[in-house]
Amino acid sequence: MPRPERVVVGISGASGAVIGIRAVEELLAAGREVHVIVTDAAWEVIRHEVGKDFRFPKGAKVHSESDSRSPLNSSSFPVDAMVVAPCSMKSLSALASGFAHNLLTRCADGVLRMGRPLVVVPRETPLSLAALENMAALKRGGALIMPPCAAYYHKPRSVADMTDFFVAKILDLLGVENRLARRWGGG
Ligand SMILES: Cc1cc2nc3c(=O)[nH]c(=O)nc-3n(C[C@H](O)[C@H](O)[C@H](O)COP(=O)(O)O)c2cc1C
Image 1: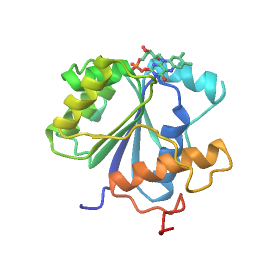
Image 2 (image 1 turned 60 degrees about the vertical axis):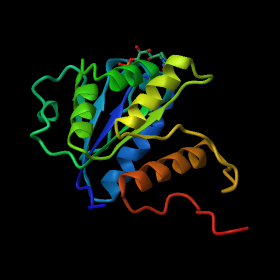
Image 3 (image 1 turned 120 degrees about the horizontal axis):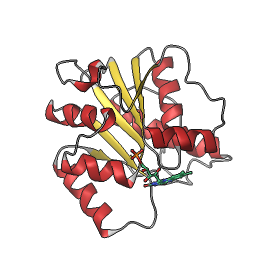
């Protein structure tokens, strides 16, 4: 896999905005050009789960879902890889059907059309048949589906440890080197 230089993090309005936020921080620390697309619903969740005064770190290029003048609206602006974390069931449905109604779904659609890695982190439980079918459709379309499923073998001691475990997996799938979580080295 070629080294991804320009990476997009899409944050939709599911619980777990901190997963996308930590991914942004780590991608910046790894020296990548990082664009963030935040849906209106995601801002609601960020205010609720992270805090009213939250700001993305300096260096992140932040776009709203309605920014139709963003270069990310066109697949002629090359994006090396994208993650949607967390992905709401609504955005999942739009991605699965190609309903590119906002900048997040439009950009992700372009990433798939250009054959670049798209990691989708769906957050809901339990899952409806519609959600399962949407995930299967997206997988067939070339996306990597990575539900944030907790593991215990790395002995997490905090929510931050659990979050970093998810972010490490996301970075692995995007092809970005990281040492965020302890890897299983055998029993
Ligand atoms: C605090 C909060 C948590 C939410 N968590 C989820 C969730 O985990 N999964 C989900 O699919 N929707 C969740 N929702 C509902 C979505 O925000 C809602 O369906 C929204 O329309 C999604 O829009 P978007 O996909 O454009 O961001 C949550 C809403 C709020 C306010």
